[in-house]
Image (cartoon, rainbow, N blue to C red; front, side, top):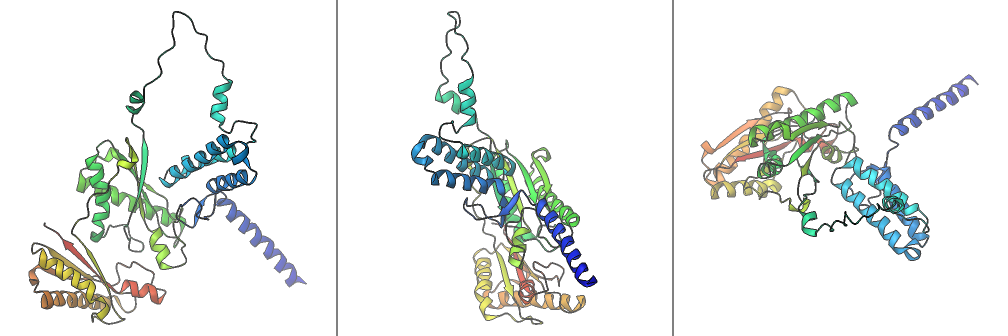
Length: 387
């Protein structure tokens, strides 16, 4: 009897805790992807506007009051456009307006702003004050619109670290080159983590990641600090499921939200550079190159032979199996095997190549699964292009 009482009591406690946990995520729900927004979760306001528009269509409002329905549909689409541009709160607010417009009966104007304007009495006209001429299209166009453009930087972070690995400098270049070309722009650099670890640790780590990108933009591109803001969000707002290494890697990311004082369509990414990154993987405890990786290594060899002014650092990595000393030695051997291959098969001068073993100090996946360990047994070829 006592055991049954304890079981029921424990169930009540767990139910209360679950309810409390869900209440903290009340503004988010599982993403149906109807609005084309990536990620496992999405703000509930966005999908509420989806459902409201679907209900309005099912009720025949698109036939009974087509102008009002189209206004609600346009408001819904605009809300998603703003939300996809990383302007989360503004997008959610616009989605609430779209929901209200879709839910309004056909006898009431669906656009609350238009209704308010219509109710205001027109000012009295006098002979001494003739009506002002309407603004011309040119005058309206002369006022630049503020837009936000969100670009996710494809920077893969080592677990628990905030430093930008050299092979991802081209990702920072997407923002740096653009902001240098357009000096009126500002940017908020947003850092995120996966869900492993405490909230406090992840919030601090995401802030550090954002600050590293800001520092790179200041130091490498001369962007004035007043134009940059670093903001850490921890493990909130995941863009992928955290159940596997691939999803967790996607969540360890940087978003750069650029505030543009011109049409957002004017954003053009800088041209691709000639630099490339090699990823080769190894069997456990082995420094022997696998045959399936020859093609990737050949690309590096061919590139360095075509551009003889380039140099490269070949970085070897291991998983966490074995001692630190053993892994350092193994990773060095892996890097040297790539260097020897490039020298022997492509005639690359040894002075242009540096082998560097980093052991298990820079993991890109968790070592508690075979798949994660295989990702960590890898080679990165960082090519310095002087062309």
